[in-house]
Picture 1 (cartoon, rainbow, N blue to C red):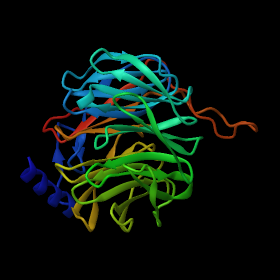
Picture 2 (picture 1 turned 90 degrees about the vertical axis):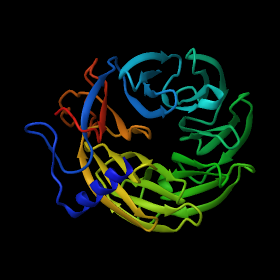
Picture 3 (picture 1 turned 180 degrees about the vertical axis):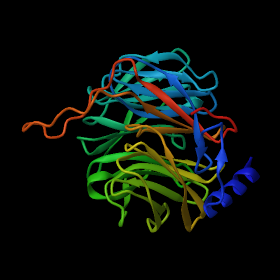
Length: 352
């Protein structure tokens, strides 16, 4: 697989590869559409996360989390009573999952075998991103309106720290060996580094020329952070020093990022209906190898390192509402029952 991927990357980078998938379908890079997984229901969504060992995808949806078996490619359950849920962080070694329930400013502790709620933990105001840090077996909720992080023990739910942050937090990432958790501060265009033992912010780094960071992914082996920024850049940063190593252009309205250590691909999922795929040629060089067409609004994403597939949430929308003096820019409504997951990969066969 790795030899095939390296050869493919070289050809794509040189611009000489056209992959014929099925009659009438072509791709400008290694990734292409594979299938849709129907979910249905009503309401919006936010983060997706994958438990690679359990072969499950967790997908926030309104007041619940939908559970999808990614090998069988079907919905197999749901986790209820998570008002305004943003995401679920799985902790496989604990057989627990942790949700960020934005509307009630709480985190749910979930038994991943039964999908039942064991307890809830009070957090800061409007918990958004949620992260399980395996080094200390602790959970971090990054609280949007509270501009803070709540840290609690994964086993007991005991709150051990409340960390004041310098602005509005977005996506985090962890490096257990370095003893650090990183988080984007979206409104300050900075990244903070948090010591996982002292629960103190030890560094605050500018991401310039990036602005408004949303998504974050990490290459632990090479100490690189990948930051999806709202000025249409993906920033590659040294996670040890905070130095910006390089940037590549991405699509508009980025939300999530992912990094695949098996292929050295860094992904940016964008609300304009694209995923930017870049390759870490070396720890000092990042190049774009593909702009993958997805669907408008498919801005959140998760990666399965085993199959190298990416999963994006999407839905169909009603026509754009006409602007009014009170609401010059309204969001179109989601068509009930159209919610789904889009699957993309490097598999040899694909649909349209």
